[in-house]
Image 1: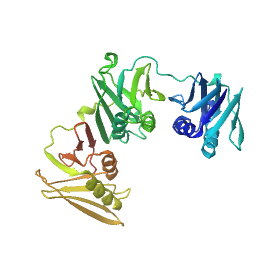
Image 2: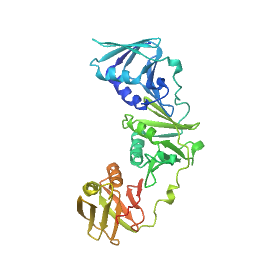
Image 3: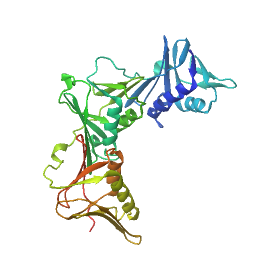
Image 4: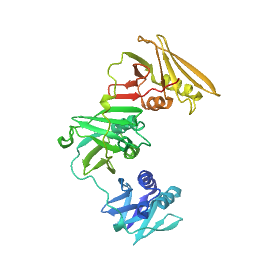
Length: 368
């Protein structure tokens, strides 16, 4: 195999593909990247057995077709530190030579035949959406998924396709985020009303794919896997096994205490109130009255904080406590200037609505 790469294009591809490479593994070959040159295209692939990714590298000139598996960390470092505009790669058996104007590296790799197969995108799309819009939907739900939880099903985002709508839901048991996305076409009838749980790690990877306004993403669910095709990149992932909670039962529908709040002002108030919280008193109290919303916090041996906002509120006065980080997380992803906060009793979850497609539920905390 013999290829000339545009170094910048190769570096961009490596920055995405190497995120899949496992840091520790009992199979050293997985710490390599498979490079495949055929006809006029060069593909770089990586997998950890759970997630696979293949990226087409633009601006590559193929002098001789072939394939190789090269250690990811070494290759990425060489490309990153290089100052050349063009890098030449030549592979003989499992030995890779990388040449620049004043440099010559020899890297020992693996036999490409031993590298695991990575699914491609074979067949028609079952779901099609604008990539930018799907990434936006993912951002609104990803932070709410469980980082560490014995309930494995909570470690992913629920996909519920129906007609020209896709509902995404993420929860860790203490908060829940739900986003409805408009699709470009009708969902394939074969998966209509089905539920799929896609791992959070896969969703985070999809969010890193560079996207322009006109870029599309096509999705297929087959044999316990989700496969995404977006431009030069194909991502495959095992689905999460388990039963996702009946989230519709969690979303309150009877709240009468509603208030419209400025997003930036509320985020600032919560962040400032959170400055005087600690592990023992990890909560911020919201006191809502006709003309003001007051955020307070208190931590033993530290002090207390009080931040007031002027509001126009017509409901009953009330107080409720929340984990401030759970409020900060959601307010950071809301792009609209304002959002609606709905409250029931102080022991019931708070509800945040942004536009017609986004709902966030957060459980209260006791501040007594």
